[in-house]
Length: 364
Image (cartoon, rainbow, N blue to C red; front, side):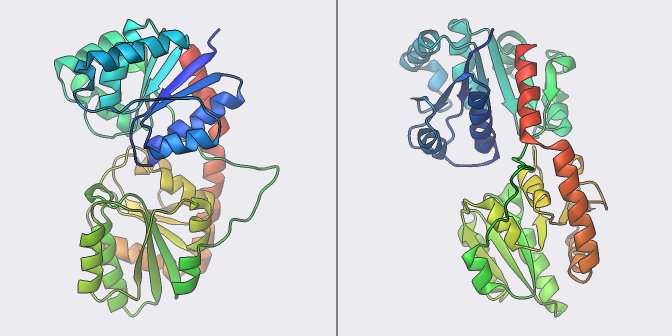
């Protein structure tokens, strides 16, 4: 009977993958498992694990860590000492180091949860890992599963890959009304648009500036609040100033309380050019917010087209702006899409159901 489970994630920042690890670690602990977290000592995940009493083993990981005999031996001893029976990875760096050490330590269940909807390179090391080391492969969307198989279909049985969507916490017994974000309350005007994600090229926030510019030129009263931090902060600030949008577009930085953030907006916009699983879409829908997003990668698996939001072809900013304007001008439509979205989340993305599905997959 499997009792000792390890979640291995050395990423320092806090993103969807790290949220998955934290939520699932707590979920497995609640089910009575002995849960261990392997993480970087300076990571957000480490801090949250400490706050919730999750035992952790700290290690820093880079592309060459698998060649470091001291790190390899250290991890082998950890897996053996704690009698780890299942270990779950989420990044290629962690997998190269941790997968090898878990195999050496004879961990019976070695799982990889991939959240990146990008093809795995057909390299010898990847073929060995996916064919000979991993016992379980988890994809967070059908699109992610497709990209795993794109280059490695000759080495991986498609039935070995299980698609399990991310989940959100839903409390039907004690529902509460989230608060409001102070910065939004202070600066909001007109309809409040929202976007959340790391400020990177992948998240496509530059398109938000184009959309905001187009809405302003139509004399539509609105405000747009972008939650997140990242390397494109200065570039986005420059674009906001260049287009004279300082009174319409606001960069909030990292926002911890996403429930209150989603509760503070009226419409959620996602301009990502690809997503393994758009967790923020589920968070927005849970707060009954209608969606406008590009019709890319896994978005159609989350957003039910024209039922919970609008999906427009990438990179058609004009169509994106038109759908946003349609929602701005139609409060009844916003409410209808929002209510349908919340029901969809409750039916498909309840975290307890997803954790149980993952537990059964590991035990199967």
